[in-house]
Length: 334
Image (tube, rainbow, N blue to C red; front, side):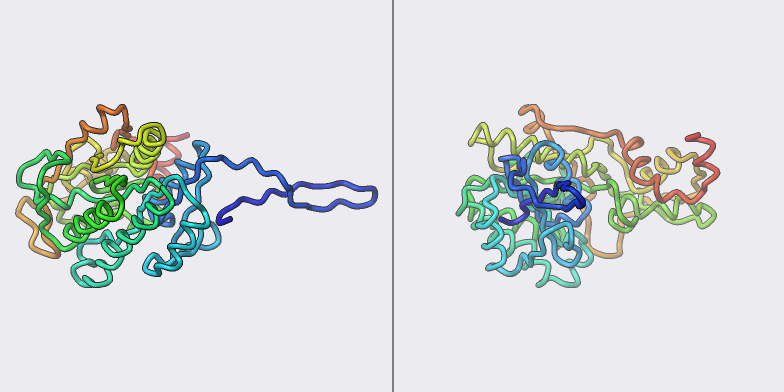
């Protein structure tokens, strides 16, 4: 079976010892498949399920081995085999092209992953009775009339938002019992600062002698990936008990900030100076962004689902390994 862990034990015999594979391994009976498990959100989702008594298998593509299964989600046969071999109870579909400017420049490739692959995965999930959670985005809204509830009519401004909305439709058309989880800008334990549009600002904050212009127009709600991962697990566990849990849901942090305000909060968290200039005009470069696509999360909150990490705490945990000034580390933490 895909992802079945192997357990080794040491057998001591007179004059020798050897490693043998155990026949019986204690594997949790709840199975979850996580796509995009090598990415920022996927890693957090995989870890959350694994640490809460789920048998988790993650799949990725270029960075999959050795920890995860290597699966090309555009290969329908490969997707069929992993789903039917593993027989998951839950699939959390994190894989996506999430960078709006890349989507604009590579529309066909982005549509294949965000739309076609999502619809196919939904079909395969339905075939084995798996509960699919499709990760979508606040960018399905135009940002002119927040906060947005699940039933509000989407109106994406850019191609990324359009592909995520089309992905939602493809998922729900192919799997009536699936869930769509819309989320905003993410941050968390990054492997490199460029993994998140929040953490990528850290170098500009640390090297404050190079004052930079920061967007002070778009209103964002930075959300920790471990909070989204917790929501996915809670949603999955509630669904195991209640088949009426399906459809569209929203989750988001509740601290409203522009990128300029995030940079100031990051500087404050690390006692660093900030000399950045706020730019209040509408951005003109790259794909068009919604001004304020705040998500109303009351539907999940009513179900008793949710977790929010305060931004100052979460960002300090996430960026601590990338702090350059060792003296600051010693004075504050020792």
